[in-house]
Each structure stands twice: as C-alpha cells, then as structure tokens.
Image (cartoon, rainbow, N blue to C red; front, top):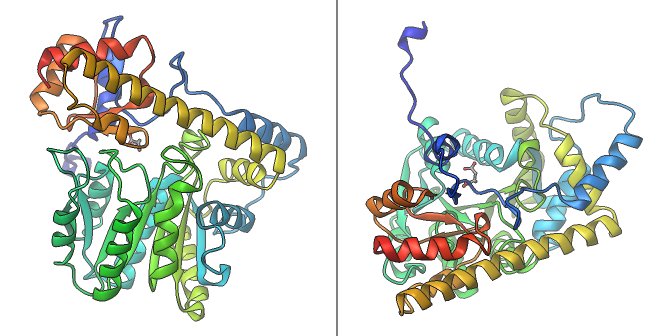
Length: 394
Ligand code: LMR
C-alpha cells in the first residue's frame, strides 16, 4: 500500500529549521521557528518549571492514567489564567491537549462533528498549520483580509467587509494576542466590533491563544479573549503553554468550549473527552502537571510571572533597538511598525525574493512571507540584520 503515498508538502516553518542546520556559515542567524531564545541564543528551562519538576519528581508516586480530559486541576488553573472569572465555570467544558496544535485540531474536529457544513474564516495570513489541518480535515476555509501591507497594521475595514460574507453557523478564527505571523493586533474597540458582527450574524467564535504574556502583559493579552468569551453564545478557545511556560516539547495545551447555556456543558465535556479518546486516549500529563504546580503555588507563580515579564520586556527592547537601527541606517521612519507590533513575530511585508536574498547573501533565515522571530535576535545580530535589510532594499 505504501506505493500509494505521495510526498507531503514540507511545513514551511519546520523546513527552515533543517535548512538552517545544514548551512555551514558561522554568521548565520535563525529568525524562523517561534521559539524564544535568550541573549546567549539558548531556549532556557524557566526557573519555576525546574522547581515544579523537582517537586513532582519528589512527590509523584504513580504514573497511572489521569482522566480523558486530563487532570481537572489543570483545566481549572488554565481557565483562571486565561479567562479569570469572566465566565462561570459551569459554562465551560475543557480538556487537556497535546500542545496548542492539539487543541486546534480537537476544536476543528468538534466543529466538523457539530456542523459539517460550517466554514472556518481565517485571517490572511494566519499560522500555516491552521490551514493545513483544516484542509486535511476537509473543512472549507475562507480567508479574510487582515494585514495592511502599507501600514503593516491591521486592515480592519477589509477584515470586517470580508467577515460579512460569513453565514450563521460559520466559525471565525481569531488570534487571542500576538498575531502569528504578523505581530499586528486588534485593539479593544475593534474586538468589540468583531463581537457585534459575530452576534448579529449567529457566527461561532474560535480563538487561538499561544502567546499570552508575550505582548502587552499576562492580563492585558487576555482582554480581547475575555471580551469574546463573556459576550458570545458559543466560543472555542485553543490555548498553548509552549511559549509562556517554555515547555515546547512537553506538548501542553488546553481546549475550552464555552456555552452561554450551562445545560449544554455536560454534553460538550463528553464530546471533548470522546475526541481525546479517539485520537490519543489520554493527553500528556507532565507539562500540564508542571503548569498546574506553578499556577497553584503563590511563590512559583510569582517567580514564573517575573521571568515571563523579563522575557516580554527583552523582546520589546529588541523590537525598539531594531526599529531604531533601521531608522538610523535607512534615514526613514518606515520601519517604525516593528516597535508597534507585539509578540514574538513581525511581518516585514517584503517580497519572497528579498527574503530569499537575505538567506542566500546574508545567512539570515526568516519565514518566506517575511515573518521574523524577534526573540531570535540579540544586541550583536540586530545591526547585522538591519544592514542586510537595508542592503537588499526592503
Ligand atoms: C511557529 O509559528 O513558529 C510556532 O508556532 C511553531 C510551530 O509549530 O509552527
């Protein structure tokens, strides 16, 4: 049967990791995959994660299965982190998932199960794996305008115009904060307008939040999500702990299904657990246990929040330095958007040929749509990147 298999298209983000690894140049710079790196180029294990792991190692006396939904204490802790108390717990079904990707996958499967004709409206551009999974599941996708290639901000008028094509039951996928790949985000007034449209047209909101704490702050980054969750009838939230807890390889995510009708929660919970069972039985536990340990212990939580804030501020500093250096070298303000964007990424808005030139001539790796990982920079590489950007004529 294997002869019937075709080569699959390479994931454009993951393909870059390989190309970068194979590049023999010493001066190469990796601004590809969304992984935080400190000034030494290391993706560290966060202090609170180490401490929680030690505590778990010392006290855990069984590796027996948890529940199909994972440990309920993990769901409770994550719901508190993301939603605070804006939605009563009785209106939320939740399951642990293998990372944020697992949460997205389960959400899409739930959508397909509940309404096979639902279309999913996704921002143009969005994280490529959104489109890849939706296509794989045979779910129709519709792109809505999002990025204004002139201002490098949100094309909000275009977005609203395109979302008006959605019909009752269609799903609108939004990024909770730190839009990937652009770094351009909705303000609260815009979130409210999107919510109004969702409610007027009977649409379903889905939010992917993978970078909470990387944008304007741990609480600030949830403002749009909380507004949606507390104002719409039905909403799905896919969350990731990969970046804000730095537990990438532990595969730690959460899917929430929120309903305004608490009478539906038990059925929703059963369906989410069913989907876990069909796909992998029990979700991974280690990362979820680490996160729960941190979030439920005052000292560990405070230490984690401090380290996350250091990371956020260091990325903001890198943004500002890069914007300043580009301003100095180009003599123009046209790169000011880099300091305005939030999260791990900025989209330069450069043509693919120029991105390719950066790689070929300067050993600088970024995703072909000109998304660069700000956290991949440091004081030494900022001037090198800025020079290269000006030299290739971006
Ligand atoms: C990214 O966008 O680079 C990250 O979310 C990593 C991934 O899985 O693509």
